[in-house]
Structures are given as structure tokens and as C-alpha cells.
Amino acid sequence: KRVQEENTPSAGPTAGQRRQRSYIEKCYFLYYEFTRSEKAYSVGEMADPSTMSDFERAFTWRSAAANKAAGVLVKGKYGDYDGSGFVLDITNLTTAYLVESFAFLRENGWLDRQTRGLFMSLVLYNANFNLCAVVQFTVELSPAGVLLPGYKMETIKMDLYTNMADLPNIILEGILYFLLFVYLLNEFRELYGIIQATGSVRSYFNFWNVIDWSVVALSYLALGFRLQYFFSPSVRKFNAFTTEYIELSDVASIYNYSYQIDSIAAFLCFIRLFRYCDLQRNLHILRESITRGLSDLAIFSLMLLLVIFAFAIAGTNIFGQEYLDFVTEAQSFKSLFLMILGEFDFDELMRIQGVVGMIYFFIFQVIVFFIMVNIFLAILNDAYIAITEKFNEEGEDMDKEHLTIMQRMQRLRDWFKQRKMERKMEELRKAQRRKELNERRAARKHEEEQQKRLIHMNMLSAAARAQSKVALQKKQSSACDMSMDVAKEEPTTMLLSESVFGVNST
Image (cartoon, rainbow, N blue to C red; front, side, top):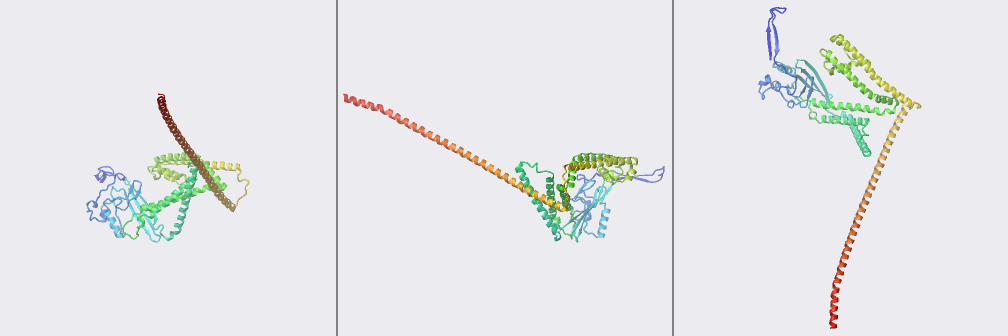
């Protein structure tokens, strides 16, 4: 709501002139999900939802799913914007319809003080190459009324892996991923052998193995993104002759992500070529020089970044009010880094702060460019000289004749043969170790079986001795019983004898 104030001065240079001042009672904050307004306004507030036209529907808020823009996220300077909002779908691209649409929006105040972003999305299709260009023009509005224009353009191929012209690429990609799969299996086998031999994987993960695993992982990640794009419903059901707007921003991002990841994998593949620098003396010296100077370079680079960041803070305080290149610390850091490379506007610095800008510029150039950058180069130079002297003292190549390209190729073939032979020998040693391990396990198992057999025999003999002892005890007890019976019968016999003898005497 605006409040206007009018007055007419009676004296001074503006005497008799009517002056008008406008005041705004309420200001609106930056755009956030919790601060956005989802309430219909203007003609959308008064129209019937069941009978409203497309023009009137543009004044009612719709979610990202209703706009068929789920997953869309536009990152701006003043906020992040999803696919929801007040949307007008333009399907009739005639001049008369466009003029009528924009006139209706302008007359009914589609853009007002609460507007924080205006986005226009286009999908352009080229039938000759079957390519789609997803174009998005943006205009952000800050709370202070600053308009920040921008645009983004992404090109995607709709018939990926379906056109016969792409057959060579499909074959080459298939060979590539098959070789990567074979290499992955070989690495797993090598890793398993190291674990079996040493019981640890610490010796396996050196710098070059990490590079190899990174290349394989990134390659298959890029393939996953391309397959996700290929099977996306927006791509599979794409119709260039439809009258409805199709949002392709999300699939365009996936399509470009896959090739960005491929670029990182390709860069790592070229880094891996340094592994074969040992085949040539100068390349070997270069690699060893970089390796030798890495520790000193890391410490010095950290110091250099701190110095540049200190100048960035100072530059933001000195030039940030008027110079866009120094408006924030991050922007100042970027501008100073470009200044080291020779890209700067000295006249603009002098215009803003004059003497202070000149002093700032010359101090930065002397400290950073003339001193610290040259120290950075001197560290590499000292490392190169030290490695060169080391190689000269060892005299590895002093007595060697000049090698032709064919000789170097032959040496490279010999090196591959030697490596292949070493791998075979390593496999034989692993097989021998496995055989010895199996023999020791078999001997240990045989010894355990003999011990078990001996224990079993001892148990059987002990049981036999116990049974014989019990039988002997039973036999002894039965003999004792018989002797006792005999002893009991003898007195009776004697009495009978005495009685008989007595009778006869009588």
C-alpha cells in the first residue's frame, strides 16, 4: 500500500512548485518456501475455478506437480525456485495470441511488488538433427527492486541409442564397458589374492589403483545416468507435435550430468598415463620433480590462498559499494585470481578510489605476482634441478646410445612381455602357496583323524579292561559263594558220621 504526500513550498528555488512523495507501508522479504504466497489475486481471486480461462488461471497458484514440473529447481542469486507458482501455459504461438496474453497480464497486474521471479521456459525442437533445446530465461527481483536477468540453455538428444547413425558409438561404448567389466573382475581377483596372502588390503590401495577404481566407478555412474535418461517417460513418450508444454529440464540435467562425469573420467585416464613415464627418462624426471615438490607446494599454496583471501576482504571493503567484481568476498577472490593472470580494469579501480585503488593494486601485484607466484615456480624449479642431478649422478643413461622410435617400441613390447611373465610367475607362486596350504590342511586333518582314532582305541581298550575286570570280580564272587556252601555242608556230614559211628558202637 502506498501513501502519497503533496506540498507546495512557498520559498526557495522550488517555491510554487507542487511536490509529491510516496511512502510504502509494507515491504516483502526474499523468496522462501515458508514466505511465499499461495493465495489467488486480481482476477483469479474473483473468477470461478470451474469456468476460469487460461488467462485467469495464471493468477492462481499451482503446485509443481500440477504444472508438470516436479523435480525442477532453479537456483538464483536471491533464492531457489521450484516448479510451483503462478503459471500461464502458452500453446498458441501466433503473434495475435501472444499480444493478447501479455496485454491481459499487464492490465490485471500479473507482476506486482510481491513478485520475486519471472521465468519463461521454452522447448525448441530441430527435426533435422532430432535435438531439443531446453531454454529458460529468468528475471529475479530483489527486495530493493533490482532486476537480475539470466538465461540457461541445454541441448539434449531425444533418440539416444535408437538411431542407426549412432551404431558406431553404441559398439564402441559396449566394448568400453565390457573391457571395464573385465578389468573390474581382474582387480577383484587381485584384491582377493592379496587378502588371502597378507590378510589386509592396505598394500593394494596405492595412488594408481585409486585412480583406476575412480575411472571405473565414474564410467558406470555416467552409464547409469544415461540409462535413466533413456528410460525416462518424458523421453520415451516425447511427441514433437503435441499442443501441451512438456517440461524437460530435469531430464536435460540428467543427460548433461552423464557427460560431465564422463569428462572427469577421461581426465583421470590421461592422469593415469603418468604411470608409464618410467619408459622415458625426461618424462620420468618430470614426474619425479612434481612428486618431490608436492609437499612444499601444498604448504605454499595454502599460504598463497590465505594472502589472496586477505586481499579479497580488503577489496570488498574498498570497492564493494561501487564495483560489481568486488561486491562479495567470493567475487573479490575470483577477480583477484583473474588479476594474477593479467585480467583486470585498472582504470575502474582508479575511478572508484583513486590513490587508495592504486596503492591496493600495486601492493597486490608486488606481493602476490612478483614474490609469491615466483616462489611457487622456484619450488618446482628446485625440485626439477635436484631430480636431474640425482639421475646424472646415478648415470643411468650416460653410457646408453640414442634409441630410435622402433627400439623404444621394442622396449615397450619387452616391458609388456616381462610384466605378463611376472604375472604368470605370481600366479604360479599363488598356486604353489595354495597347494602347500592345502597340503598342510590335509596333513593337519590327517593328524587330527589319527588322534581321534587313537583316542577312540584308548576308549575301547579302557572299556574292554573295565568289562574284564567286572567279569573277574563276578567270577571271584561266585567262587567265594561255592566255598562257603562247601563249608556249610561239612559239619553236617561229620555229625552224621558221628551219629552213625555212635549207633554202631552202641
